[in-house]
Structures are given as C-alpha cells and as structure tokens.
Length: 162
Image 1 (cartoon, rainbow, N blue to C red):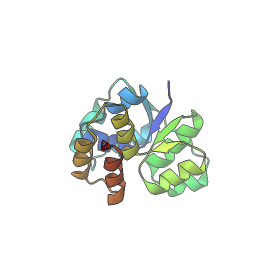
Image 2: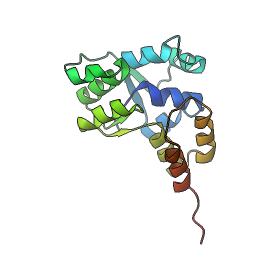
Image 3: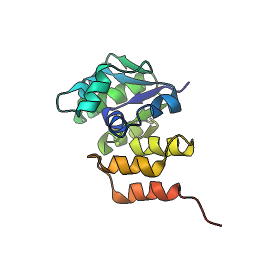
C-alpha cells in the first residue's frame, strides 16, 4: 500500500467539492501530521471542512508532528513544513500539496508531489469521477489556479473524435 501524506489544501478542497472519499479509493489511506489536522479544525476553515476533520474517517491517520530540523522549511506555513517533515520521516511515496512554495520545497527534497488537480486527474483516469463536474465544483470554491491548468485537465479527458 502507498504511504501518502497530505497537507491541508487538497483535503480541504476535496471535502468542499464532495470528493474526499477519492483519497481512500485511490490510495487506501492518508496520513496527516497533527499540524495539518489543526489547520482543518481552525475556526477560519470552512464549516464542512471543520465538520469532516472533527470526525475523521478510519482511513485518515493523524500522527504527531515530527520535529523539523530543516531551517529552510521554517519559511513555509506550519502544515506544509510538518507534512514535508513527516513525508521524509516515514518515508512517504506521495505527498498531496497545492501551495507552490511547499511543492517546490518537497520536490527539492526528492518527494513525489501532486495537488488537488493531480488527485482529480488520477480519479478521472480510474473512472471514479466525472471530471467536468469535479472541475466545475472546484471553480466554485476559492481554489487558486492558473486558468490554463484546469482547461488543460479538462482537455486531457475529452474523448478524441475519430
């Protein structure tokens, strides 16, 4: 089974678009450090996200945030730094993260990283979701992205004519 560590962003957006169970279907389970769980429960987090995190599913493992010995990770937010540190400690096969600085830091440490869009792409390729509907729901959130990114995702899943 894959060892998957998640940062806050992908979990939050998958909850908001009603697709959080994709993580269990695609990966079997996900591990988060307590710092990420705390961000999901933060009063500023959307209510559906707080509700989900308050009663996490059996496939979500919450583990103590490991001590971060890397001063470069101190430039990231607490959840990103904790997710990267945990991913290095386990070690993880995959890290779910959206923020550019965090993704760059994780990749600089040779971690395999995908974000919310990557999860949706994998789910669509596995026939688990209607990608057009999922992207439409994602656009209705405050998810920040380059428009070409979602357009490219949709284009890659259009049936080819022949």
